[in-house]
Image 1 (cartoon, protein in one colour):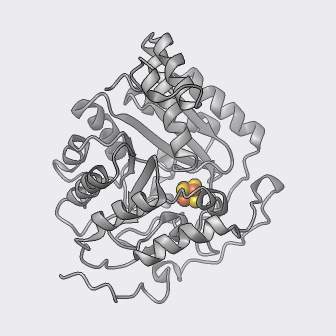
Image 2 (image 1 turned 90 degrees about the vertical axis):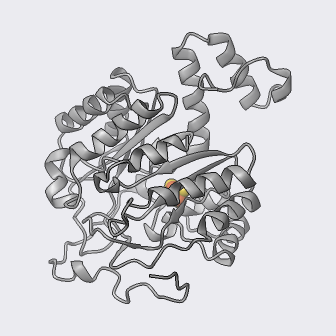
Length: 345
Ligand code: SF4
């Protein structure tokens, strides 16, 4: 199959979900409201994405934070096309038979990162169960092109589970992204309805495997709440992630993309999110982000700096952490500091 940039997305975005009964989309509470994207910086980001014919999860997932993130040039690139081989009941990405990979995409993503001047970039993808390696090599090429064109940019990847294909995680981890994120998405009891094409323990093992390959890579995972899970089930997921030595947990409110998607069972209040954050910190995560609008890539750059500082502190390198913090806060120039920015380096 050769790459054809003129191939269009399926005309009915969620054809496989049309047989589902309509599930009414309730009014969102006040704490979910976001501003419309109107700033000139938002349009500048949009222009770069469009000129390079790139896909972003910000648009494909209908992310509520797009106005805020794109105003700061923080777009999350979605590689390997805009059509996914799975049909999760929470996800707004189109399902179907994807196109062949675009061999120029890794370079184009790197050019976009360069044009946007990003210090930290998040790269995600659709599931590509049709590919022998699940798309692992394409991730590696994208990491390599960003490293070639964007000196100093830190790289966070948010990968699919590669369908557990042998060697796929190892190949990507050996490319040494700064952060390897893979979302569990929900509690194991809800997998059959929410994430039917995936297996909870395959995802957990993936995260564990990244640390086996390279313990210096930060690992990150996220779940949505409001899908009908209990607090005890969320606590169990936290324990499972800590047992896999995952460093960073994100928790955000599930929002229903269309009436054909899984219903929102509950809007979790900001106070309940604070409880989840405290629970997670008590269980030993280096970093926790838990608010209604938290998404895997929301504030990813700032959170990555906090993550590095947290590791330095945990390693007892308090003074280094303070120096690194001053550099990050702009109090001193990087070359005045004697501190390594990361214990991993
Ligand atoms: S939170 Fe992530 S997906 Fe949403 S707009 Fe921001 S960068 Fe994009």
